[in-house]
Image (cartoon, rainbow, N blue to C red; front, side, top):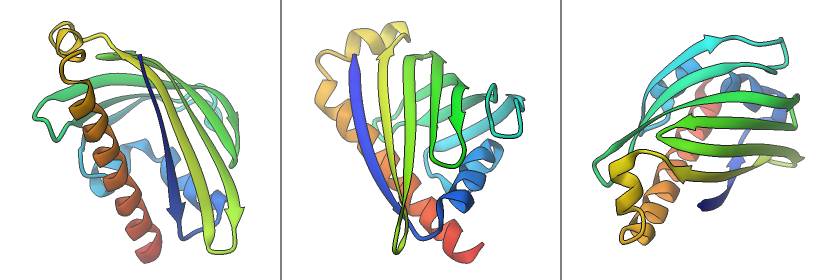
Amino acid sequence: MFHFISTWRLPAPPERVWREMADVESWPRWWPGCTESTVISAGSPDGLGRHGRLVVRSPLGFALRFEMEIVMARRPHEARVRVGGDLVGSGNWRMRDVDSGALADIGWDVDIAHPGLRLASVPLRRPMIWAHYRVMGAGERGLATRLHVG
């Protein structure tokens, strides 16, 4: 099991950040590493039940294919997702206002279900952790840039 927490500092108020994050199909345009994103079900107006399929390319050379479904949403401050596919587990998003915009804490509790990668996850645990934070950092920078120009 992998437990990750990232904090994104974003130059926009939480409501604007929420709208960008809710537009899952746009992620590949601003999030390096996210190569495909498809909404399977739109869910409610606040996002509850939104279900999407993602492909994320790791800096280690492999791709993870997984689905996320929002199982709890408190717009624009909190959401929880269920994850299935090459990754299984859950994620959460908590956002708060700050003078410069928003701080978003993004947590993941996931295990690797892909058979080959699951076996490799023991000897490659540290590189996989590094790769996760590199992909998340690229997402933070991409979203910050999108919020500045949008």
